[in-house]
Length: 302
Image (tube, rainbow, N blue to C red; front, side, top):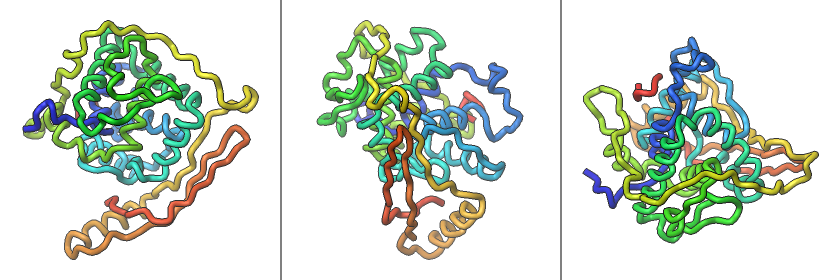
């Protein structure tokens, strides 16, 4: 079993803590979705993807089922990236998100604030517990010691100083941590940590049972951060990231490739694709020459 001092912060671990602090979506009429494949868990992941891309993806039934399956793989740190969740640190969406955080922080902060207002704020105490849990995890992760995070605006804060913060903008703090999780670290590195925090229980829901945050004793207060827009007011429209959408046919081909690779190992195939970021009368285009193709509800963890 992984000791507490060996805990790692990754996307799946972040998701477990974030989701644990969420409102009970199943009791909200606005989330009473008939499609069983789009329950609370994939809905929350969709919102975190929205923070990165600026849009809510519409998927066909089969693609939505694939998304749900891959969300479960991602949140338990079994994969770094999968179809419809291409947010590994070298994936196009993450690369563009990294650039937006550094160049258009106000846009990303606004998106995260939407998500925080819609999904968190159950009680002030629960909000504080989420922040303290992330603070303690940051202080425990040995691989983060020399890093800085965008948890308080455009000026990064050193990891050593993060647990000492007492006045926090919740949305800004979550932007900085989520940015680290999808742009710096591999999600699979958190597998041992998530197995402790959300242990397997013979097919039963893998609920969060951790007590992260109890060692952060400072009195936290929340204060909204004011960030000056990096563009003119008339041009201040949310940035969007256009990324290639994998359809059902490609997903099926992906599954076949995975099966063939298991039968006869061979070098991973490669994909060529482009992405662009548009908005504010500016365009950012990037071409990823080579990307290794390794891709193949309920609050209680189902």
